[in-house]
Amino acid sequence: MNWDRAILTDSGGFQVFSLGELRKISEEGVEFKSHLDGSKHFISPEKAMEIQNDLGADIIMAFDECVGHPATYEYTRESMEMTTRWAKRCKEAHKNTDKQGLFGIVQGGVYADLREKSAKDLVSLDFPGYAIGGLAVGEPKEVMCEVLDATVKFLPKDKPRYLMGVGTPDYLIEGVLRGIDMFDCVLPTRVARNGTALTWSGKVVVRNKEYERDFSALDNKCDCYTCKNYTRSYIRHLVKTNEILGDRLLSIHNLRFLTKLMERVKIEIEADNLLNFRNEFYKEYGYED
Image (cartoon, rainbow, N blue to C red; front, side):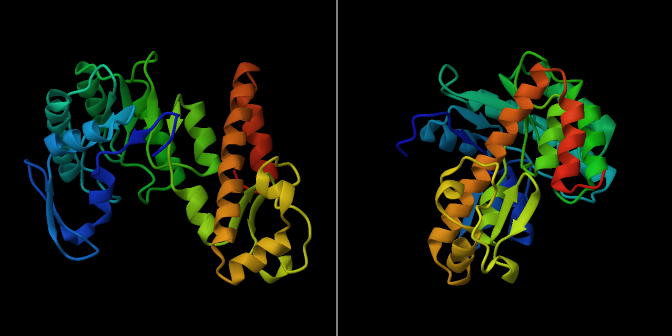
């Protein structure tokens, strides 16, 4: 990959979740059909470890089942318990323990007691870090926050806490307020492909006609390559004509916006001012809270 910084890989649990009816889950693992050609494949906890060991990522994930929302308590409980058993198998199969950090993934849906049990069971296995999965899958924001409140307190303070699949500005801030250290999400590049920029004043849907003759930068508070060199009008032209450069420029900007936001969050933590910053940011960004 020619990337000299940290690399994190997922185990495939969420990808299997996204396949819907194309998958079949059992205690041994997951059989699924390719959405591209219909070919059949099987992945087990051991296979997930083998693949990630071969890839050589710095942080790798245990294989888990991601339960959608809504889901019954009984199904969620059985799934969570299976995820814990899979985590044990992953730890036993993990070969490169001195070079690759294996994280266990807390599941349990929206049920506080299941999240508590999942967290405690995984902590007893003594992973180098812990991920929180199964959120941002359709539940309301307030429910996600309640689940985080019910989960994080059972995870070690001296090990990384990683919230999977969350990347909107408000969710990032809410996660940090609750003790989350790491996040990942496709959001900045996905909305870029739809012609949307994230700015300190809220979303700018640059493909809209109102930006046809707008010769200002995407965000005058941004220091990214895109904002220094291109106008909203020109980027809109690229998007409307399906030029790949438009997607790239918006992706560059959105990624920089979120990294800049997290840099600011670190500063506010050190100043013991994160809650005030949250309220100010929400107002400027246009969130109703």
